[in-house]
Length: 168
Image 1 (cartoon, rainbow, N blue to C red):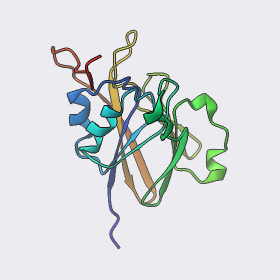
Image 2 (image 1 turned 60 degrees about the horizontal axis):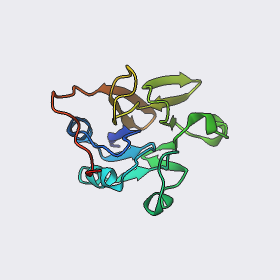
Image 3 (image 1 turned 60 degrees about the vertical axis):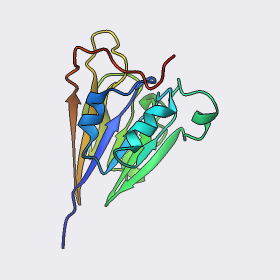
């Protein structure tokens, strides 16, 4: 029996801007998950040009367009169930008891991969405007039956300033 490989791109806290480097890092994804603080629907449109997108609403996502984004989502990929929310401090369930492989969140802008028991917790960091001295990052999942591997990808930013999803 074949054991297909699923590539899932993880991005968060874009705050209205989509960097070409982020698009390049997510280009081979079968699915992209945005963990909130999108701030502009054009960001999701740009990501959809690469792969199907699932997104949750962050604390900065306001307006009519953002009301269609759920606060939390369950994304099933192959044999894996991934729980997605923006702010990990709002996690109100036992991930192991609920049968999740991974919990994916954003909000802190700090990239993290951490195993807690059999559950993988991933924060892809922020691919939006740089905050303090934190790196600009996305993350990727490589999923196979019974295996889930995550990797943080630090974006090598060009000298060119970031390009906003729209002019403000």
